[in-house]
Length: 51
Image 1 (cartoon, one colour):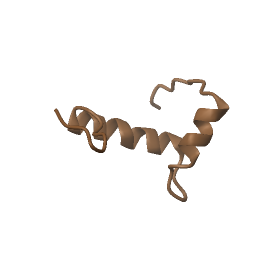
Image 2 (cartoon, one colour):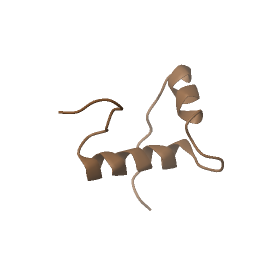
Image 3 (cartoon, helix red, strand yellow):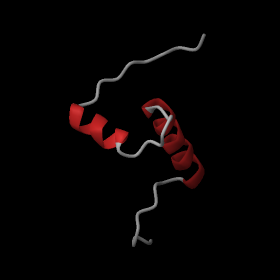
Image 4 (cartoon, one colour):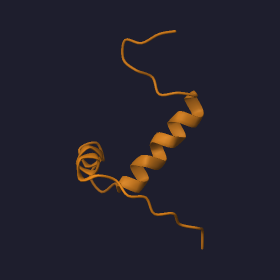
């Protein structure tokens, strides 16, 4: 069994996250996908932003 860390988030952040998850997807799965994107891309891309 892998180690599990529990984090607390505000109700507002939870609602925001829930508005982005796909049907049948958990918040944990969504966050894992975000981390994978960040690790692959090196940063989150913002619309209209360029270096």
